[in-house]
Structure formats: C-alpha cells, structure tokens
Amino acid sequence: MNTPPTSPGSVAASSAPTLALPGLHHVTAMASDPQRNVAFYTEVLGLRLVKKTVNFDDPTTYHLYYGDSAGTPGTILTFFPWAGLRRGRPGNGQVYATSFSIHTESLAFWTAHLAAQHVTATRDTDRFGDAVLRFNDPDGLILELVATSAPDARTGHTHPSIPAQHALRGFHGVTIAVIDAPRTQALLTGPMGYRVVATAGGRIRLAPPAGGPGTFVDLLVDPALPRGLNGAGTVHHLAFRTPNDATQAEARATLLGLGYHVSPVMDRNYFHSIYYREPEGVLFEIATDPPGFTVDESSATLGTSLRLPAQYEAHRVEIEAALPKLT
Ligand code: ZN
Image (tube, rainbow, N blue to C red; front, side, top):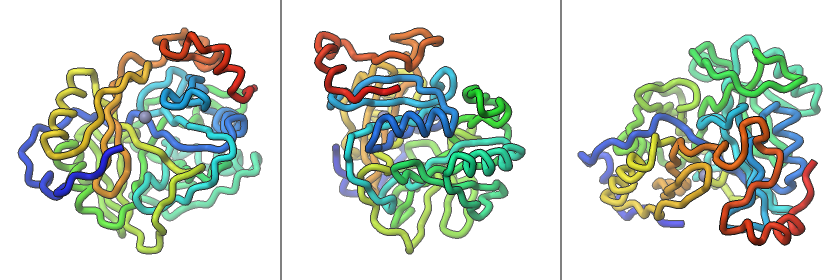
C-alpha cells in the first residue's frame, strides 16, 4: 500500500514532533509451507507459537506468530505461509536480515545446535564488537544470532532441548538493505526519533533513545546486493512499537503532515496498526503494545488453537476446512 512521498528529503528539516517509538514490535515475513515453518521456529529455534490465526486480509492463509513465552513486543516474528509461494530474493529495498539477541556464552551452544539440526550457519564478521551467526530458515529467510554482552534482561521462551540460559531473548534488531541511506536515515532520525549510534563500513546503526537489544535498525549499503524481490523467504514488513492508541494517533498525524501516505488504523486484534512506506520502499508499521496476545486466549494456551477475529468466526467451519492441518 502507499507510495513514498514526493519529497521525503524534507523530513530531515522538519520540526514536526518526534514519535514515541521505543523499539521494534514485530517482523512479518513470507513462507511457503506452514508445517515446515512451525517445525523450524518452534523446534529448531525454540520460539513459542503464541498465536495461530489467519491473514485478516486473506483468511484462507494462516498468520503464525512466534515469540517469547508471552509474545512480548520486540520478540515477535510472524509469517504469512502461502502454500507453494515462489521464493523471493533478499536484497535492497527490504528488511534484509532479522537478528535475535543471545548471550555471548550462548554462541557455542547455538553453533552446535544448528549443526545438529542440519542448519548451515556461518560466522559473519563481528559487528560493533558482537559475534554474529548467520543462517537461513527453510524458505531462505536470512536470520542472525547476535551474541552480545549488552544488557538484555529478556528471558525468551523455555524449550526442552534448549537450556534456558541459551534461549533466544527476542530481537536484537533488523538490517535494512538500501541503495541510498540518507532518505531512510532522515525518516528514522527525524520524526521517528531514532539516532545514529554506530557506523562501520557500509552499516549505519540506529536506535531510539533508550536503545539496546530489541530496538536496533541497521541500514546496510552494499553495492553487491541485488534489488530485493518479494516472495517466500523475504520480509513483508517491519513494525515499530508505540505505547497506545493516543501515541499512535499522534504518529499518524505527524507522518501525514510530512506527506507520507499512511493507512487508516487497522484493528489486528492483538494490536492496532498503521502502515506507510519508507523512501526505499520498505513497508513500515506502527503497532500498539496493547491489547496483546492474551486478548482471546489464556497465556497458558497461547497458540494451541485457531483464533479468528470476530468477522470470520461465523465462517470458522469453512475456514478450518480450507487451511492445511498443523501438528
Ligand atoms: Zn504487522
């Protein structure tokens, strides 16, 4: 949806108010096989399936949410698994890589665990002092584990085959691949309230004032990267947190005032969302922290049964019959 404003460079000089965006809310990506997706994220990575619902715009498709035990914003990776969807190509104009935070002492565990699970992982160049382990999910989505000594009190989700101290704690951040960084940087450092916290080579790291794991957005300028193509194994959009409906309304008004084409507020049941495209084409979302994933099932049973929004509940039988079975 939406096209970039005609003069996005103007955001840099704007004196518009700064949005209250304390970090990342979720990342949504595309997959081709829901069962394989569930197996990888719950059994290999040890995340909790915190919500099994449908794509609200296409109820013949699942929308699967993974995260920590409670589905805390900043830990949530979600998928639209379209059966048979052709593979995309990670590249410029996309969220190129999604990174999870682990303790520095967890690197050896994860190196061995991924190998045991037949997942090929490579040690990337250390990034701002942190070791980075990179691998792909079954659809080719680029994932990273960032072993960081930065404070991160999040505990992730407990899985029987992953010692609690090694659990993925939630996002470390994302890397957006761009052809031209200044316009995206201006949006982030202007109205979105981020600031540059580190730069090395072609990578610019941005964070909101509180910063830390779960908040980082890296802009990567790599001339070797192709133009990204959407499809399985690529990111659909990136969502930032906002505390509540009022702060979201302020954000929407500010972005509209700057010439961005911003969607109306969408009720996603577990949060409320607005969408707009940043200048390089990446779809951004601003999502409220409340009401959260326990709005329609208990914390003990998150993700165990198909949840439908009210508008689809009357069609539950047909919808369940059309969806592939998940175990
Ligand atoms: Zn979203």
